Length: 87
Image (tube, rainbow, N blue to C red):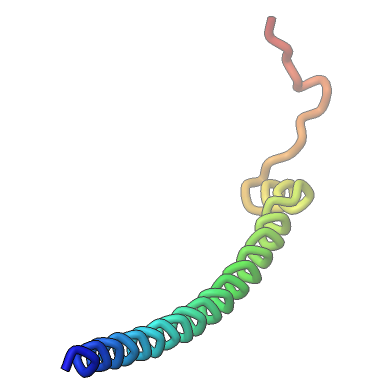
């Protein structure tokens, strides 16, 4: 009788351990899939960030700013005679 109870307890512990193993592996695989999708999102964001930096450098280039200030705002670089230094 005592050995039957021990065998049932061992069997239940083994079954519980197997179920826990299956659940852990399932969670591990689910987390791995989520990690892969997050890596893809990161790569997309890194690519977009690089494009935005390139665009910022293009839009902020000194020559382009000067050209727009000349064309659209009718601004010109002052001659040395027009420059007044304040002390």
